[in-house]
Length: 387
Image 1 (cartoon, rainbow, N blue to C red):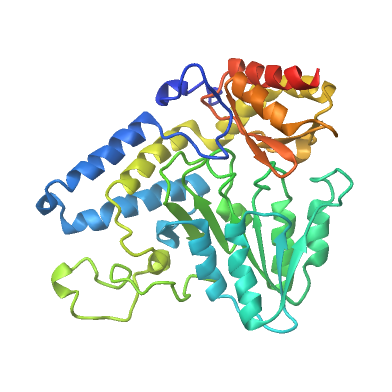
Image 2 (cartoon, rainbow, N blue to C red):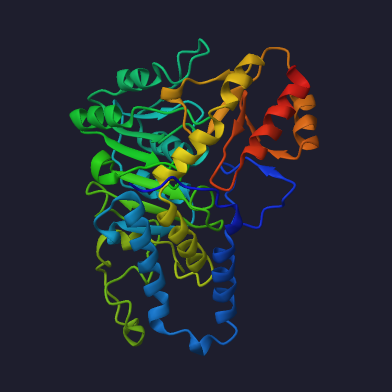
């Protein structure tokens, strides 16, 4: 059996006196990724040393790493894009809708997976169905059933996060995939707040697209994301008509011999100037670490790290989601009525604790670099205000 993951803080440059429980905001760049990015920047000191294959090979290696992480057998189904909204806009462009049809999304999901769908129904017609929780203080239990109830024969797409980005509320993704398959609707997942910190296998789940921003749980740089495409969208029209997305673009001398045929798979969806000589090596270096640690081990580490804290936090009156519907690496702490959020922020700052305030929750997101000291500082900051 694989041994449990131990603390990996030595791979990061986090301050010793700061308790960073905020990976859902932005993952810290590992030391090895920082070195790889700097080396990539330095390569442009002498551009003649950058060969044509350097425009292709590093991106292909990045696809291979990400494919292994999500269980994808074909790396060429993965596109390098700048953001989730870029990939969702590409998908929305290739989704047919109209009067009498509908797109289902989740209440307060991240806007990058909302605005493209709003534009689609505004321009083409149809209904945008926004599905929220029951509203009785319970979020996870029953939310999936409400989503399933809103999917019908007129649904063209269901676009949602793998978990809710504000508080880590989990959904029954397998049930949603089964329902979308029944009615012939697409399932588009924003996996930004899951992939890298918890296991997700596209072969088992079989969504029509999975998009992940790299700067959170993949521990990568900003402005780089990865998008896996299923059969439904693989032959779609890209947002950009790039030269590098065309067949035989590796032949620089022949670029004036224009061709309409794209590179195979999802490479047509790559952003222009995708061969970023600093960002791609940095993300590849981070993915090597994530692959070594394995997301399921990261999840187990976070689960064990926080296990003793939840009963104490509940005793203070904080609302904590049940284990079944709470992500181990990302969760919201609901404040009791009447608590002064500004006073709590001051207490957290005094105890040198980094978290996020999202909606009505304090969002806490530990990772494999956190220790019990970080958890104790979090509990102490809350106790100062609530005890």
